[in-house]
Image (cartoon, rainbow, N blue to C red; front, side, top):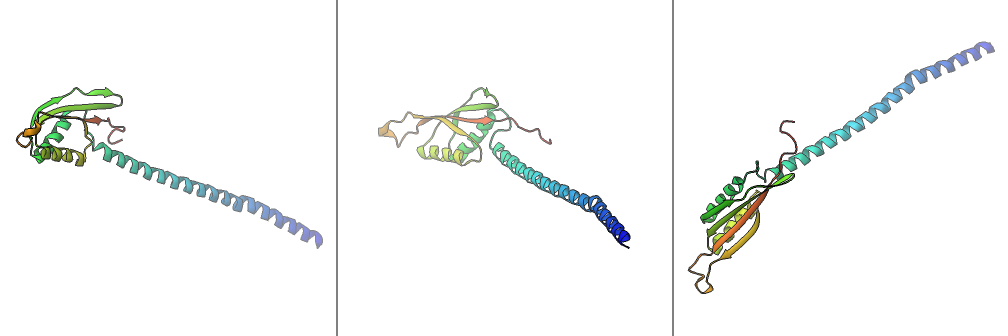
Length: 172
């Protein structure tokens, strides 16, 4: 009876070892692989969400800039602000766009007369705008201090912005 018991015990150990290696260990390996894949997929998903947020923020900034390398965008914005401020632009001179890879620098010179209040209101509208427009130069001239209340100063103003070409093609 001992040889049968020893043989049965050896058979049981062999069956357990085969079962452990072929079923349990393999399932543990698959489970580890699945956990690793889940963690990787979660990291990929988080990276895609962060990239989408970054691209949306980038697009918000892009909407503050002109859609094309054309100075007429600044002119339209300045005319709109001037109308709101109640002043009339008397001269508009658009400079040629200057390439400075990867940007294009757009500049426009304006000349007008305005009261100090109108000038302040005009500049405030430009500053409060959701557009990126920079005052490059502002020159106020032609007012005699003794007759300041009767005259409106002559103002020369240079505004600029940047055109940034799209980083990614639309729809791709």
